[in-house]
Image (cartoon, rainbow, N blue to C red; front, side, top):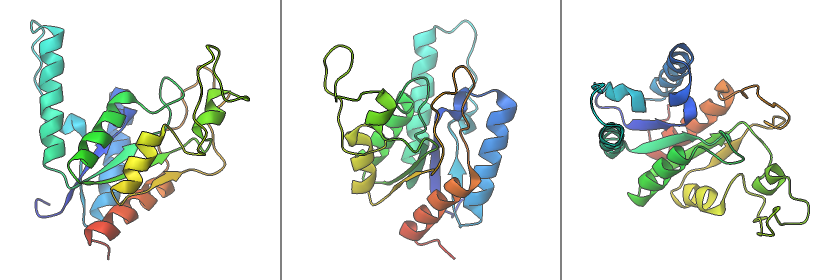
Amino acid sequence: MSDMPKVYLAGPEVFFPAPLHKTIVARKKAMLTSYGLAGADPLDNALELPEDEAGPAQANRIYQANRKLMDDCQAIIANLTPFRSISADPGTVFEVGYMVGQGKLAVGFTLDERDYRRRSGSRDGFDANGHSIEDFGLSDNLMIDCSIQASGGALFRLAGFSTEGNGDTAPAFFDEELFQRCAEAVAEVLGTHN
């Protein structure tokens, strides 16, 4: 497995209950393996965080370990489904930028087919404070979508699904067919496609 190109698996799944996280990550890794790729999940670091260590120190160790993991990967697949807001998880967005900044391939997916402006609820292009809301028909802020494209990757949306109206119910965050499209895109660019 060490000779296969590594793909960093970014997304809010790290915040899910452990059994759900493990199930999703195992499925993603199995799919990547079938394309000659190895998946690397942030929780693969298995850091020991002493209870008496201050929160900021623990956070810095997690940050350093995840950066090292990304440095060892050739590409990223990012789950950009809106999480806790109308936008993608901010940590995931940073990870996309970090990888793209290194000249690495970024591929993303979202299970919410609506564009950013529609998710914001704006009809006139402004929020409640009178601030403009971009309207480029993109999935999220232009810096996210455009950086993925500039890296040679793509951002895939699940047609016919949105997180709208779910209230307190957690939306779905994984779709095998959508993730397979991401794996295929990475394999094609990195030359591991069968």
